[in-house]
Amino acid sequence: MRRAALYLHFPYCRSRCTYCDFNAYTDVGESRSEYIEALVTDIRRAGRWRIHTVFCGGGTPSLYSAQELGSVLQACRESFDYRPLEVTLEANPGTVSAEQLHGLRQAGFDRISLGVQTFRPELLTGLNRIHSVEDVSNAVHWARKAGFENLSLDLIYGLPGQTLADWKDTVDQALSLRPDHISVYQLTVEPGTRLEAQLRQKEVTLPPEERVWKMDRWMRRHLKSSGLRRYEVSNWARPGRESRHNLVYWKDLPYLGLGCGATGFINGWRVRRLLHPHAYQQALIHGALPVVAAERRDLEGGLRDCLMMGLRVRRGISLPRLLRRFPGLKRETLEAFFQGFPSSWWSLTESRLRLRGRGVDFVSTVCEELMDVLLIEPALTDPGGAQIEDANFTEVATVISTQ
Image (cartoon, rainbow, N blue to C red):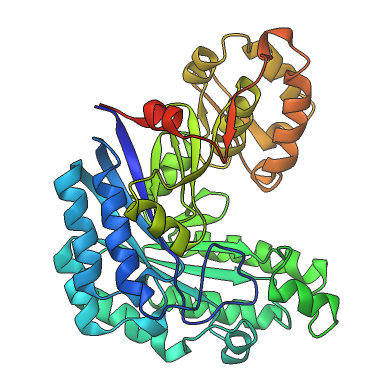
């Protein structure tokens, strides 16, 4: 029986943030309970897996009651060899209550990730966030009182109209709540979002690059001095509170993705489920596999993912494991490539390859240039993977089955 992490997608939100391009919908209505039924069915049909982490994301999973979310975890217990080391729920601070958080802890959730983004009220309004600054402090207080000993906060910098003073205030207020983990993201403008339209129509403007750079530099120094350790490009944690679920992605390990639009990586296949909740629910009602696409990752894709994800993490990549997975890859080739960068940017030993210092900030550039070099090697090429789209998914069902 293979081990895997489990991602469960909850697509509904009360409103859509201006920067959001996730698979999320605001037309909840009566579909909310129907979606839970469909997700439970998906869980029960997923086959036998030994589940070691669970992450409920969205959307806004905290729109659901503790009883509804508890029924989903119960289905996991009944369907899988369920031995989770960590069970996370993403939550909007404006959608939780003391009673709900107590019920969630009793149901089996042990980690809460709160989408805070900023502590400036005017910036929250500009992002179309539904929570207030007071909601955040209440949510943290209630979560601690309910018994959550592992609490994470999400923050964003580079927001329209955000000053360096705004950002310093946000980080300081976040730290005053004594979280165990903080995820910090620079704002990205995704095509098709409301933010992209606002920028195009000059309704808002982004901070200048120099200010954003100062925000990032100050934040890294400040978080380090607070006792949080940067263990991944965008993530900081107290020792032992690193996100075990997200480390699965960064280590390129198997994970099962259930729920509409969820993507999983299992048995060498990347499998994506139907995007829209209604289509997803109808497929399950009619006994069909709710999958829209599946792709078997080729050698190039596997190497690219392994490098891009693994070098984001402070510990880097196990060199022996990397060389076993890609026999055409040579340590000498890697060492010759990295000699072109400052020695303070990287470390290559007999056991690990990792980026450090400024190298971590340029992980994407480093990986792309490294791939350009490695793909010249004949031993690192193959004919490519197989792809299936909008087809008969009998083959996919066979591939991902553990029976």
